[in-house]
Amino acid sequence: MSLIQTTPLQPLRIGPITIDTPLVLAPMAGVTSHAFRLLCKQYGVGLVVTELLSSHAIHYKNAKTFGMFDWNDAERPVSVQLFGGDPAMMAEAAQVVEAAGADIVDLNMGCWVPKVAKTGAGATLLKDVCLAQSVVKAMVDAVKIPVTVKIRSGWDSTQTTGIEFAQRAQDAGAAAIAVHARFASQGFTGHADWSIIRRVKDIVTIPVIGNGDVETAEDAKRMFEETGCDAVMIGRAAMGNPWIFADVKRFLTTGEHLPPPTLDERITASLFHLTTMAADPHVGEERAVKEMRGLITHYFKGFNGVSALRALLVKANSIQEVTDLLHHERRRSA
Ligand SMILES: Cc1cc2nc3c(=O)[nH]c(=O)nc-3n(C[C@H](O)[C@H](O)[C@H](O)COP(=O)(O)O)c2cc1C
Image (cartoon, rainbow, N blue to C red; front, top):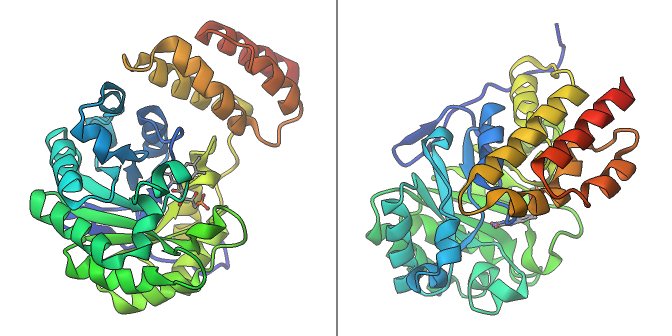
C-alpha cells in the first residue's frame, strides 16, 4: 500500500468527445506515425495527435502530404495537427482532414523551425494574435469536429502572448488548448515554466492540456497539481517508451509504479513499431527501416551495449536484419 496521495483521474472532454484517460501523446514530426500512436494507445494513452501537416500542401494536393493521412479506427479518438497562417487555407485543410476521418483538428502554434515559422505559420502566429484568432475562427466555422490549438508561452520572453491568445482562442470557438510552457525562441533549451499553464488555466474555461518536460509519472502528477491542467501531454519521454502512459496512469491512481519493461517487451514493441510502419503502403519496408534507425535505440536506452547495438542497427537494411540483431542482443543478455 503506497503512502503517496493519489490523484483521481478526471476524463478530458474536448467538445462532444470524452477521453477517459487525460494523458495525451504530443505531436512529433517524424515520430508520431500511425505505428507509434497505435503502440501508445495499447499502453493506455487517452488521445494521440498526428505530426504537423501543411495546409498549403493539402491545398495543392501534395501526394506526400496525403500519404501522411495514416490514421484509422484503431487509434480513435485521433487529433490531426495542421499548420498554416492563412485562415481560408486552414479552413479548407480542416475540412479535408475532417472528411478523411479526423476526430479533432489541431492548429499548430508552437513550431519555431524556420521552414515553418518564416511562412507566417506555427509559433509566428503568436506574434499576431488577431490573425491567429481569425485562423481558429475560420477553422471552427468550417468543420463540425472540435478545433483545438497547441501554443507555446509566447514568441519570446518579451511577448508572453500565449496567455492573451488563450482567451482569444476560446472566444473563437476552440474546444481545448495545449500549452508547451516554453517560448518559441527557446526551442527546446532551458526549462518549461509551468506557471504559464496555470495562468492560462486561470483565464479560460475550455480544457487546458499542460506540456513540457514531463519525463516521469511523478512529473505528471506534479504538473496536474501545480497547474490545475485538465490533461498532461508527453512528447520526448514517450519516444521508445510507450509504457510511460501506463506507468503514469498506475502511479496517479495507486501511487505505485509498474515494473519497467523487460528486454523482451522492448524488442516486441520496437518490432511492432517497425513492422506496422512498413505495412503502410505509403512507407514500405525500405523507408520504415531507414526511419526506425533513429528511433529504435530509444527502446533500449540505458541497456548495456546500446551504443554497439545502435552502430549495427544503422547499417540494417531489412526487417529481417533488424529482427536478427535484436534477437542476437536478447541471447547476449540472457
Ligand atoms: C522530434 C520532435 C518533433 C516535434 N514535432 C512537433 C509537431 O509536429 N507539432 C507540434 O506541435 N509540436 C512538435 N514537437 C513539440 C512537442 O509536441 C512538445 O511540445 C515538446 O517536445 C515538449 O514536450 P516534451 O517535453 O514532453 O517533449 C516536436 C518535438 C520533438 C522532440
